[in-house]
Amino acid sequence: MTGRTIAERTAKESSLKGRRELAALNDALTLAERGLGRQTTAALMARLLRIAAMYPRSVDDTLMWQVTDLVTGDDLSDAVKLTLIRMGWASIVQAQYKVQGLRMVAAPRRRQAAAA
Image 1 (tube, rainbow, N blue to C red):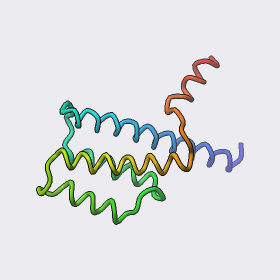
Image 2 (image 1 turned 135 degrees about the horizontal axis):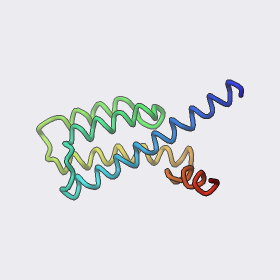
Image 3 (image 1 turned 30 degrees about the vertical axis):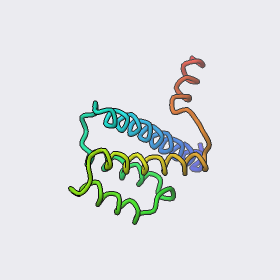
Image 4 (image 1 turned 60 degrees about the vertical axis):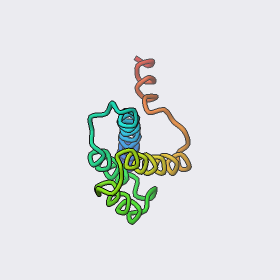
C-alpha cells in the first residue's frame, strides 16, 4: 500500500465524517425548528462552526464570526437565530454540492452489507 492510497482513504473518511456531521446538524435543526430539540442555539452554532472548520473553502471566516455574534447575542429571537444557523448550514451544503455532487451518506455501508 502506498502513501498516496492512505492519504486518499483518509480524505474520503474525513469527507464522509463531514457529510455525516452535516446530516446530523440538519436533523438537530429540524427538531429545534419544530420546538422538539433539546439543544440551545449556542450549541447548534458551535456544531456549525465545527462543520465549517471541516470545509474551510466553503465558508468565509468573517461571515461565520458575524453569524456567531448574532446567535450568541440577546438581540434576536431563537427563531431568527435558528434561521441564521440554517442559512450557514445550507451554504456549506450548497458549496459541497457544487464540488462533489449529490451522494448518499449511508451508501458505502449498504455496499459493504451487500458484498458480505
